Length: 273
Image (cartoon, rainbow, N blue to C red; front, side, top):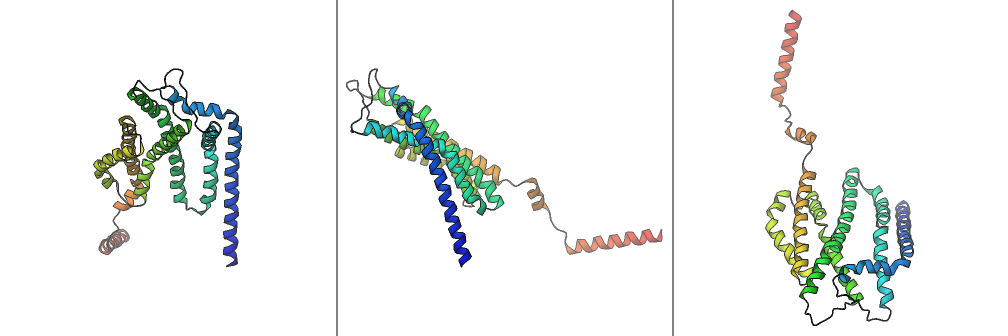
């Protein structure tokens, strides 16, 4: 019982040390980026500013909002920059308890899911925001002058980033379901029509009520579902050694007896010769 307690305490100490290292890296990156907090927010706001009328700016309705909103954005960017080190600390903590085949599967999935989430955010920033804001600006009546609040804009941007980041995790989810034995590739292919309908329903719920953003979320979701099927099929396909082992049929006792009789007959003929 004492050894188990000591092992548990050692794991807790290691977990504490890993968390401290991850948080320390996040704080260091955040402090280094703070002098450019305003510029970072301006970069985030650029898709919206490009669609506003000339001479129009965003507004801040709160007293401390002009300070706290750029700080929140800078913290988000600092987390993205520190994410590789944070993931390394998490991997270093759980890797000793994994089997070799689990390590071979877990590390690519962790790295792949992180990369896909970041790609989803980049796709949202560089492609979706521009089209959505342009559509809204063209649809708005000419009698009003839009002046978005910076806090509401941040809330909208964060929700869109999360929606598209999670959407780009579809291939990872498909692979995990296949590897866990919850469903096979054939069933996933049969479910295509339901996935397409579900993708547009989800897009209608999590995106603004415009056709552009809904379409740009649903279509990548369907394409990534197909990518997940392809990758799952490749990963679940047996290797040549496994196929050879599956095709091998062990000889029966009768065949073995016949082979022994043949060998004995050959030896007798050789001795007589």
